[in-house]
Amino acid sequence: MHEAPAIIILGPGSLTTAQRIQQCYPASTIHGLNGRVEGADAYYQAFGDTLRALYQQGRPIIALCAAGIVIRSLASLLGEKGEEPAVLAVAEDGSAVVPLLGGLSGVNVMAREIGEALGVAAAITTSGELRFGTCLLNPPEGYALADLDQGKRFVSDLLAGEAVRIEGDAPWLQQAQLPASDSAQRTIHVGCDARPTHRDELLIHRRSLVVAVADAGPELLAQVRSALRDAGLAEQALACLLADEALMAEPSLHEAAEALGVGLRFAPLPCDLASMLAESLPEATLVEQAGMVIAVAPSPVDVTQVGRRRGRLAVIGLGPGAADLMVPAVKAELASAEDVLGYETYVRMAGPFRDDQVLHCTDNREEMQRARHAFELAAQGRSVVVVSSGDPGVFAMAAAVLEALHGSDDPAWHRVDLEILPGVSASLATAAQAGAPLGHDFCVMSLSDNLKPWSVIEHRLDLAAQADLVLAFYNPISRSRPWQLGRAIEIVRQHRGGSTPVVLGRDIGRPGQTLKVVSLAELVPEMVDMRTMVLLGSSTTCQFPRADGTQWVYTPRWYPTAG
Image 1 (cartoon, rainbow, N blue to C red):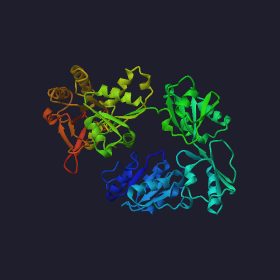
Image 2: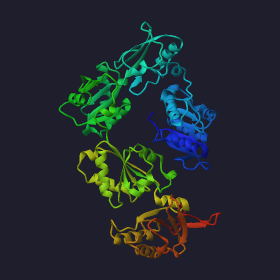
Image 3: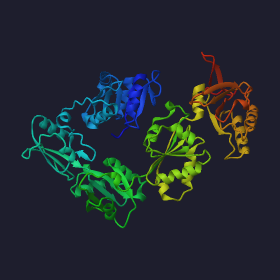
Image 4: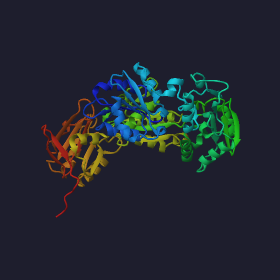
């Protein structure tokens, strides 16, 4: 299962069960019906459309509802059996787990995992699995079926009463309830050799090959395949590629691994490739082929024991604070992280965390130290997240992380897999609550002079106000600089009328949030604190009453023309 499951619920009565299932799959997301469920990770409007979209994306689906609803929703999409993701129906109270689709995508394995978590027996109905205690068409991790169509015919023969004998070592087959006989005509062959299959044989490849490559280039994929072919070894028996850590960021290496469907591991390159493999796999036989070295291990390779992976550093934005305003990609990144760094308040907002996740909480003024620490951890091969509130690229940690990287001459830092994941910025969250005050051109400014002179702030503010841009003020006031917001208001009043709408959003997206609309003439610094977002309208910004007595505020997309 490569994709994180989507857990779909229709009503609040399913949420507790969904959360118990989510503990099995930390990267999964709970999707709740909009207007009926609170506390979900994401929301949808139409159940059928949502299921079909997830199915077409290849996402495993765990639907907490009647099986019939799921079947009717997906009926029009059902095609080739080997291409479908896992789909399960689970009773709202967790009393039943029914695998529906995805027998070749591990649905029965998921059903048993969910059943164990919920304390119920999964309703497995697959004939082969019920008869033999294993799914021959979906071997466990470390093994791969050579030919699905041949496998279907082979299993059909066994279900019809044919006996079978096993060639090769596969402990999981020894534990199955197969109709075994030393004289059987049907054979299950387990190995890593490339060989043709025939009607009476089920060929299962043992993932026990590691290919070590010395360099990377556009022909790497073809070269790896050619080396395996010339050595008489099956591509499906490949467990991973091993390369020098200096090649970590080479695109062709990652493209080759993705095309082969295997992982990438790295190690410092010693005097030769054979030494690199021998150190990682001392029991393997080494085969030199076309400038590469292939290790043939006697059992499936645990790739986590081969070299190390490329470290990852994700700089994420939590949004304004509400869980439902955090984007799913950020939730998935937090679930997979080993280390989480950030200002303690923001780290706590990002939780809960598992016991095996390491939290590194620091003061809000230690941004560069935090960024450097994050690179040090990621350069060791760890999966690291740096947390910001709002969007990480708006007065937050993304710039600090990139500044730290820009100033570093450590090649290990530059090889880290760095990604910036966006969040809903406070200005956008506040604007959405008010209506659309940022509907036309706008300017985002921080009024803090900690990192830039106040004279620069005044100059930019004067120009932005002259340009008639809507203004969004971050860090508008604090105890250490109580006078500066008043000066900013004075500058804006030189260019705006007193009736200009001003939106004050405090703690938007967090408990106790407040939203207030005042005029520029009414605005005084005492209305604002450090947790307030100030959106100051342009000459075209409008307001009108809502049905509840508060105000809608928006800036039209058009602009009046001269004359």
